[in-house]
Amino acid sequence: MAQPNDFLVKREEKSAQKSPADEAVFTYFGPVGTTQRFRFLVLKDAGELLSVLPGSEGRFKTGLKALRWDEAEGGASTEYLVLKTRPNRIDLRKIG
Image (cartoon, rainbow, N blue to C red; front, side, top):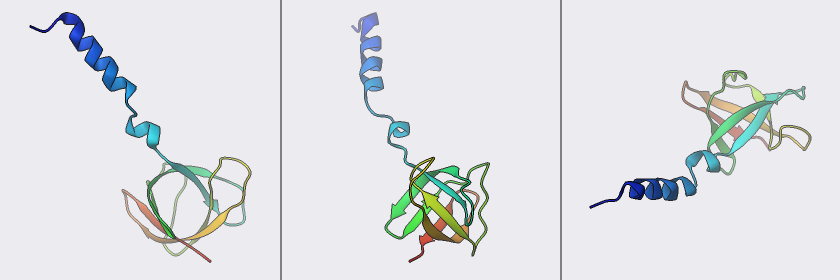
């Protein structure tokens, strides 16, 4: 028969494992010609193609360009072209 403390031990072991939130990758995008940046969750990063989860702050329009930074401040930016926007993801392609 299981002891009352068995439940607590198993729960502690589970919480010690990495959760998907710990492995989440974020990137920053902003309009070309500004240093303004908005944070987005990366869904898929396949070389020159990138998919991000739409955020509530920044908006994308198909055919427009956006600058991508890996950090919230500083660093160099990379230019991307917006390929497709959907309610559940935004697809972009690296330019150059």
